[in-house]
Structures are given as structure tokens and as C-alpha cells.
Length: 344
Image (cartoon, rainbow, N blue to C red):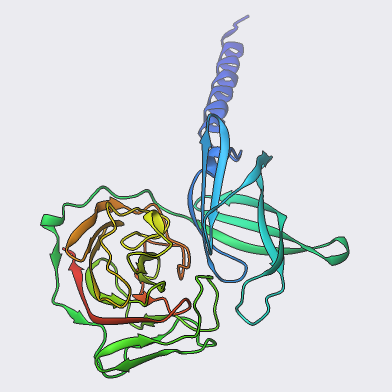
């Protein structure tokens, strides 16, 4: 009796099994690891504010930091449970004293959970309420691409200058929040912000002013003057703050004049005394920045890891306005000229 049909059936079965195993191996994995969460994320926080989240591993332990308003806050109790990442952030959660104001009360431990699908993140904040109640607040994040290589600025071409301020009125400008008080006006060719606020608290009923037009990469020349102890900021593309202070401000170094606030420290303090005009010459190309303050190069084509506090949004890969901080103290600006980069 011939065994050929039996052998043929056996070979067919083995071939089918082999192909099934190969097909299974080729299927995309549906499992989630901590690595899927690692990287930098642009968040839209529950209150609409920009949030910048970074997650990484240090000595095999997950580390995280979340920037909103004020300094970046370290995350604690980071752990992965199945496909969900959990962490804790200590923040104030009380009702604000006025519309758009800061949360009130003591800092409390807020639980967060997050899931990832591709380059999108879904997050839930568990906000503690009185009588042991908890409110679930949902928001989203977008994975940011890695920093591009350092540009060769000698190869960059700029277009003709755009005069951002006409010296006569606020045409081409608007408040970032129309519900706030507008302390800005044009006086003798100078853009002046008048406010009774004297402290550096990051919330105010007085508004920030932004250009209606938005830009990508550019060179910006701008002059500023603050009173002694004054504080403002120039937000590039609405996301990176070039700090505006007097030379002897209590804020120095990475928070001082010439800094990209909280991100890059200037090589030196090249600022002037209060009530003196200062001049910034700033070049922003491919998320790298060069800052010349009063003729001295204090930042030389350095990468900016992410947005700074007070940004309009955290996605620093898209165009944005020039916005001037008016929610701190009085400040004056003049001679605002921007030359956009010409891309091939």
C-alpha cells in the first residue's frame, strides 16, 4: 500500500502550520510597554492651557516632568498597569477667584492615567472634590518629533522685513484673551503696556498682546524697556519666551534677561539698568535659537527642547504669533522688525 498520500498530507499540514506562525509573527504587536510613552508630548490641558510632558527612563526607572505655568513639575509614582500609565502630580485644584485666574487652595496629589495609540495620548485627571468625591477630566496629547539637526545659519535666507507695529495704533494686534483688561496703547511711536501690577505672579486680569499674523522661522529685532524690577517677555511663535527684565532683576541666569525662560541660560547678563532701552536680535530656525542682547551674543544656535511656561500651545512645530507679556508689570516696546525665513 502506498504511503505517498499520507506524506503529502503531512507536508501540507506542516506547511500550513509554518505559514500560520510566520503570519502571526508579522502581525503588529498590540502590547504596550513604557517605551511607547517615552518622548516629548504637546498637551492641551483641561483648562485649555498648554502643557509639555516629557517621559523617559533613568537607570531603568521611569521619569517625568510636566510644564504648564510656573516651573516644570516632577511626576511621581509613575507605573504601567497593562496598557495604562499612571502618575501623580501635585497641584492646586480649588476654584479660581476670578474667570481665567489660577486655581486656589493647597497643593494636593492628583492622580493621572494615560494611554497611547501611535502618536496620540489620551489622559484623564482625577480631580479631588469635597466629601471624597472625584471628578474625571479628560484631555489629549500629541507626540512631538525629535529635534532637527543644528541649522547652518550662513545658508539661511531671510525675506524683507515686516514692520509689526506701525507706531500709531494696535492694528495687527489683539489680546490673547479677549476677556482680560487691555493695558496696551501706542504712545509717540512706542507700544506701551500700563498696569498697576508690580509682582511676577503668572496670572493677572491684564492681558498679553499678540500679532494677528503668524510666523514659522524668522529673525526678530525688537527694543524693550522695563522699570526697575519690571518683568515682561517676548514669546516667539507663541511658545518660546525671551525673558524681558532689567539687569539687576531678582531673576537671573536661566530666568534672567537674555534667557529663553527656564530652557536656556544666557552666556552672560548683557542687560541694562531699569528704564533703559535694550535691543534683542533673535534668530529662530529649526527649533534652534540665537540671541544677541545689546550687541552681545548670549545664546549661540542652541536647540530648544520644548515650549516655555505661558505658551499659547505646546506644539512648537507649527507657526505662531509674536506675543508680548502684559500680565506682569509695565513695559514698553519699539522698533519691531521681523524677517521671515525663505524656504526652498
